[in-house]
Amino acid sequence: MTDRMDTLLIGIDAACQPVLDRLSETNSIPNLESIIESGTSAPLESQIPPWTPSAWPSMFTGVNPGKHGVYNFVSFDGYDWEVVTANHVREHALWRLLDEHDLSSVIVNVPVTYPPDEINGAIIPGFIGPESPGTHPKGILKEVREAIGEYRVYPHYSRGDEEYTDGEKMDEYCALARMRGEAFRYLAGKYEPDFGFVQFQKTDTVFHEFEGDPEKVRRIYEATDEQIGQIVEECDPKRVFVASDHGIGPYENYEFRLNEFLRREGFVEATTGGKGMPSWNPIREQLRAGDDETTWEPNRIERLAATAAKMGVTPSRAVGVLDRIGLGSLARRYAPSGVTRTGAEQVDFPASKAYMRARTELGVRLNVSGRDPEGVVSPEEYERVREELIERLGEVETPDGDPVFGEVVPREEYFWGPYVERAVDILTIPNEFEQFLSAQLRDELFGPPTEPWNHKLEGLFVAMGEGIDTGADLSDAHLFDVAPTLCAALEIPYSDRMDGRVLPVVEDRGSAAYPEYTGPETVETDDHRVEDRLSDLGYLE
View 1 (cartoon, rainbow, N blue to C red):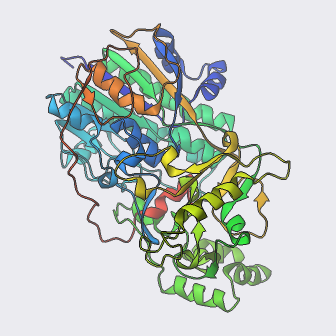
View 2 (view 1 turned 30 degrees about the vertical axis):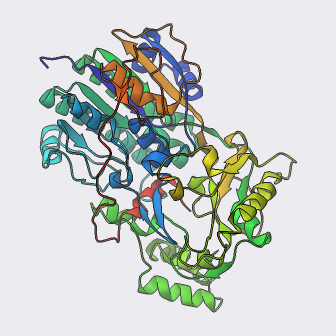
View 3 (view 1 turned 180 degrees about the horizontal axis):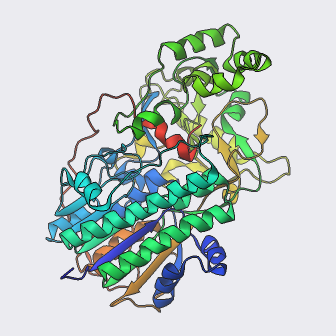
């Protein structure tokens, strides 16, 4: 490269100090340690909810979800839903602001960037897009694949796939990390950007899929660290920033079935059959195949399963019979992925007063008449019902007598802006993020966590390089601060709509008014197939 990159941002999903401390003991992250030791680092407080599809847009726009509009893996329209895309993000990303100042960018594998913006530079979208996503410029993914040999967004296998050994799965993880680094270095060499942003996702997935297995965590971090070292060496940026969307750690207490609680309290009605709870399972294979549809409808077999369930013949009972004659494993392997879901007992959303729609929203939605298609809570009742629920949920204790929730508050406590109406009505924030929330209906209110490792609020922020004040006070650093800080590092004003501040590692250049976001509301697709691929993370049930 003839020109040095000005500023590089390395995104490491779920990176946090407790994880890095353990990896340092085995000398697994020498390049990352070198960046930290040469610069400065601090915990980075995430947002609510601290999950990938909402947190990364908050990081790269600098605004809270009430302003950018994405709260979850899915966006809801009444009782229906679709997987979020970049078109659901209703605020300009950092690289669009750089465009206003004739600064170029290369963006690789950043979540929720499909379909990509048209910018001065290049974008290869990452997580939640299809396997072969549209890119900017068009055709650049084919060029990258020709240059580096292979590039995929997702691994070859699905979570829980028993045809692959754990070792083979980890080989896939490491291959994906290598692809991110090679693609970024190729594009950086081609475009010589002012700003580069590359994100590594499997540092998060390894905890969900393998329950924090230390050896597997070590392997993916070593592969990621190797790529970080090669990127920094080859691109030679003036400044390097590292940031994560949230932290991760053990959930050592209980799983709380919130909808089961609401059913017992008279707010949730149950049914069998139909589309049910948002789940990634029905369209995972289609997303891997490259389709870009964003929702799911039960097929003929799945509807038959729902009908059978209403007559008392559930999928589990049917498979139980097959188990007794030695065919249960075949049934599990070849049954359509939506059969179990359509046949299981579910929340009857139109008939319920209030419900948890998806556990990763961390909250409860009221079914309000005039707002929701078949609302049963009148607008006049809204505040009374909401206050009643807040009080009841705030009193819930675990079998050990500890509070389930650290906070139960109205959504306005954490969200502000034009898209607050897209949020849950009540936020239910787990106590110390050690209680696992489930939206499923079960016989018991409590059980062991479905995922014993999950997200924590404290992520990581690192800054190193020219002009970085390594003695700066980084206490209270927040996810919303990343975008304005990067703007300042690139010597441009940040947007006056941003909710964050410039962290004092760089000089504050002030704010300015930028054009309002005017992009499309949703991506145009055939509305049928994106979602299931994301079950690999187990975020939705």
